Amino acid sequence: MPEFPTPETFSFSPSFQELAIDRTIVERDLGYRKGPPPEIVRQLIDEILPEVPLRLAIQCGFRILPPDLFSLTESGIECGDVHISTGPIIASQLKKSTTAALFVSTAGPLLEQWSHQLMAEADMMKGYLVDAIGSEVADRASEWLEKRIAERVTPRGWTITNRYCPGYCDWPVTDQQKLFSFFPPDFCGISLTPSSLMIPIKSLSGIIGLGPNVKRGAFQCSICELKDCFRRVDESELAAEQR
Amino acid sequence: MNEILESLQRCVERGKVNIKSPYPPDMKGQDGTDELARKALEAGIAPQDILSKALIVGMQKVGVRFRNKEIFVPDVLMAAKAMAAAMEHLKPFFKSDELKHKGTIVIGTVLGDLHDIGKKLVSMVIEGSGWEVVDLGTDVSPDKFLKAVDEHPGCVVGLSALLTTTMVNMEATVQHIKSKHPAVKVIIGGAPVTEEFAAKIGADYYSPDPQGAVEFLNTRCTPN
Ligand code: B1M
Image (cartoon, rainbow over all chains, first blue to last red; front, top):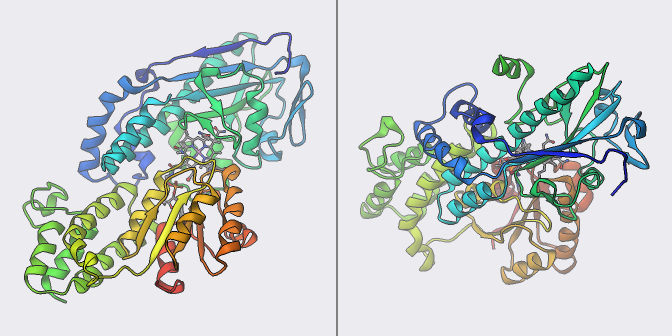
């Protein structure tokens, strides 16, 4: 693990309530944007949501890279002798960053286990809905963490970019090995397999640029090549939700 | 077409399992696939007609609507459940060889990858099109695929992966299978997979969705 003068990591365990996930959000995640899902799906989501907090182990955390060791390149970032090749698309979003925060978030293993158990009992529908909620939890925990990162840097007059993940645009998923090398082992209960799969599955990793002159820039979905992804969120939708 | 078969097809499309099922609300109190399959058999309709003229047609419509993004995963799951309820009545005819599957597909998520749902969904739609599915699960090694191909002569193989890092294990799997069984056809799919990648690793077909896999199976794979 690279040695830095400020090797501080911060970790949190937000509650499910803090992530503000409701049925409408889950319905959108399932693809129902133009019309409602079948009533039975709504009923099942309503049945599942109250049980979710009992089966969560949300953890998320970040580390701010020391600015004196941080630099931007055409195709990524450098910190000490570690080069992370985010690819030019994400590198351009990190433009003007003085440094960056690396982050992870997870819903923990329990929701996944519940989903597998339901499917093994032949309740595919409920299992799938639990799985979809788990994805949203991991996503929202990152969003929640982004706010904590912003709070940490605003007193210095800094702003933050959007968050970007390895595996998007030209950033190889394998770069997660480098990203995780900045965290202590098993940080937030997440481990990485040799094929760069995070365990628990409902986990996310990524980067956020920080500095006095950074712009929020494009949201990850709007720079992603997967144009017809059923979970694609456009920025107007996001803005409406945040109002 | 026979009225029972027509209703049966509609029930698959709409995910109506049985008379007790409150879903879909506009079909409340009506027979579902469970009752209709039984009634069709009692009326002397040939099991093959029940399968190919009602169930498969209904499921095919579901597959196409899913591909066109008119419906989503939960709708497909409901249709698959309705299909399965009817299939229960047809099981004895498969056992007695009166009904035959179109062929067998051995399917699994490749080594290093634990993603299950996409592959399960593909399996359900393929099963609903009249093929026998042997699901090997997730994190399946090339050896395990090969063993299953040995055990199911004439089968087709389906590989799934959700990340670029695990997608590379498809290549080793295709090579391993084809080195012993060059004629076995391999279909691949999953979010990061592309047609170019399929061509590069020597797979026979790439499908972005379950229905594409069904169409390839039905048109390009000789039943065993
Ligand atoms: C045999 O023939 C066939 C034929 C068709 C076949 C087939 C076989 N197998 C599948 N198909 C096809 O038919 C099925 C039914 O339609 C489909 O199967 P799927 O399994 O794809 O579909 C499921 C039913 C539903 N699909 C899903 O649930 C996946 C949806 C998307 C949006 C997605 C989600 C939800 C998530 N993710 Co992530 N995620 C994405 C996905 C983008 C997308 N639109 O697919 C993908 C897969 N993720 C990606 C990435 C990069 C990541 N994700 C991550 C995390 C997450 C969440 C936790 C937020 C969440 C959960 C993921 C999960 N696996 O449970 C990370 C990895 C997590 C880990 N454990 O390691 C992370 C690495 C990001 C990060 N650095 O944190 C991308 C992979 C690209 C790559 N470079 O490998 C990705 C394609 C998104 C993108 N826009 O690029 C088809 O693919």
